[in-house]
Image (cartoon, rainbow, N blue to C red; front, top):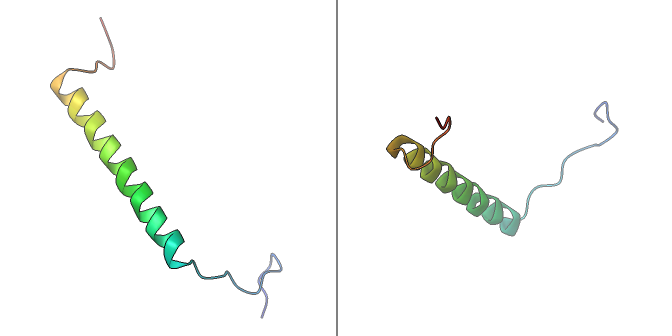
Amino acid sequence: MGRADGHHYDAPESDEDRAGKSWTYAALGLLVVVLLVLIATGTVQIFPH
């Protein structure tokens, strides 16, 4: 059974790809948390006066 786009299946991710994505998402999440803390403490102003 094929899908509408002609592919029969998606190849599974390798362990290396999965580990790389998890580190990337962790780093991105940490960056967002740091930015939120800086905004909350007033170090970074979103709307400067």
